[in-house]
Image 1 (cartoon, helix red, strand yellow):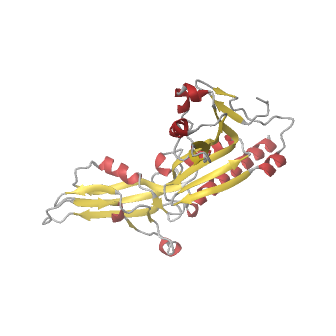
Image 2 (tube, rainbow, N blue to C red):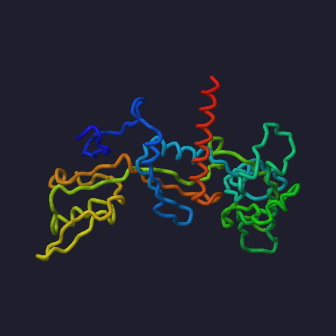
Image 3 (tube, rainbow, N blue to C red):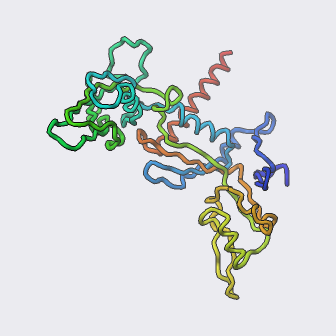
Length: 321
């Protein structure tokens, strides 16, 4: 195993050649590093996206992940003024459910609220939604109150500003409460701008994770029943069987990136020393799922812009010191 080997090797009870960042004070060059860096969009499905970061160290990717979780701003319900609630759900529980609703509104169009709790809401920092529902006394069946019942109430020119994309809840079918006949709920919700570091309701991602690209190597050939066993110990589609000229079936590696690195093959002595499983430290698979406030492709750009601003502020502080 060479000193420049960029892989970790997964053994039965340990991991060899574990990760260490390659940067040092004398040899590292930012222009050379950026020249070899590659980012590939592998697929986008609805609100999910998978990216490949090639020739990028894990701390940089992890910084993007942490920014996605905690520092990309969104709009969320911060205060609820409850005027009537005769349902079985307590006021504070219902307010908490409202707070977790993802709001489709561009946070870049808003300012952060000041710390003055007594200040009046302004068009620049607040969105107002009203919820007013009452179950008919004559109805036999219970009435479901969903997030679509929230109605946006524009203030001070917001109607004109957001006429092309009026604020709304991301998912209109989220169940909030169930009312019996005669019960009612009336409240006003105030949305403000915030980040996930302050409260999870502001986080724009459902998940943001990364893993190193798996690499699988067979040190000998596997045929027929043994080939089927090899196929069974790895994740789906990682190993496939091909038919040989003599009619036998041979196991080959077809899609190693689908492997979840369970190391199940170590349970079989006949396979343990015949298969090499490793992970490429310079090829990172990054998965992100948007809650819905942003298009998923916009999220990565926002996170990188925030990282750039943080770096610029650090440089300014260093220059000033």
